[in-house]
Image (cartoon, rainbow, N blue to C red; front, top):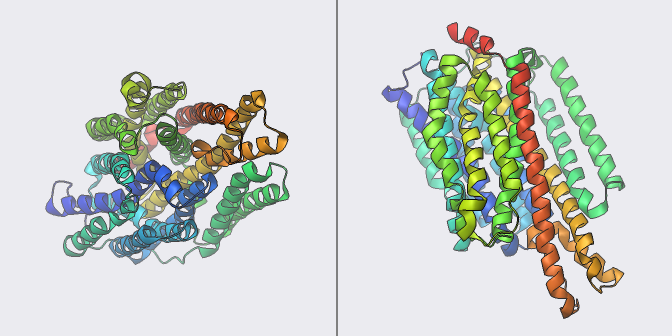
Length: 516
């Protein structure tokens, strides 16, 4: 397929369909974060259940997204993209009707299969179809719109959550997906890599899926059974060995899902390391910020969603501009400064203690969200441009898949590791707080067991009413203390991302590719 101009009819339909489908997948994560408190109450879910609801989707997505990119290159990017959208719609409908936590987790895995075919398809279609000179602007436009819709997710989720309609977070995907399918069918031409004759690396996919699942299970079991329980160290060890096996499989495979030679390019390696650290910090920070606002600061779920509006406005205003800057001057400086500023925003948010609710938003959460939004606005488009421009067009689908996979893997680890750490931080704070109570040892254990529910912890039954107020205060203070520590770690991950750009990313690699 010949490349087309961004402003042409064909170029516009490619952008519209890609943005709509990508937005479907991305909106799920941010909207779901906001309605977690409603979902937790409605389905009687524990804090660990919440992390599995998030991670079931991310695990499958991370494991299969690399195959999704390769499938598109081989069988046709449009065809695989459309199949992914259809599966994602089916999974979304099933999630909306799920009567229990277990079934919701299972249907989230189905969504993950659809997302793995759909997400890399969008960027791959853009990179292979839009002409070289306008590719940075196209990716910037895609980044801006998908991020805006993604950050609009919390507002939508908050409105549905407050109305008791959290299931509509999943149902809303159906009309969006059907519209994207219609546009692709009517207006977009097929695109494929004519030289692709490779087989699919299912062995590698199984190894990475089992490895990530084992690590996730191990980390999420720590709060319940302790670090030295056999369930923890055996699953963590198994997960580590499986990931090592994945690397060996990729090295020896004739047609690897993650071609290791791509990482010989320092810019590609640096951009993906940056992606891992920054998005781990982003995922954990946004999750705990939302839980803190609703469960500790007494925001409604809609109010919590609305607090991200400054972020959305900044992305609308700056993301496309940042993509153009990366085209003209190279992405390196933007990818050093952007994550550093984003990390500073998360650090500012970590110092917010107990507030008097939404009335104090402008002097508490607002400054940190603005700084964080500025950092991300100057990072998203240049980061995507650096990844896609550091490899040959032959690897566009695979490169998109690798980068998206690392984003999801970062979120898996953020949810698992930060979830475990948050519970441990919460436990430590609780133990100090309840020392002044007259509870016996058994009652103290019952109080501490509630830590797994984080901000939704409730005073156990049969506790002396004179101690109830102290325990409620301890839960409140303990959760805010845990939130502050998680946000500081998230900020550190943002700064690590900036360091990766400083050490590895070179503008010369991108400029050389763009001159070809």
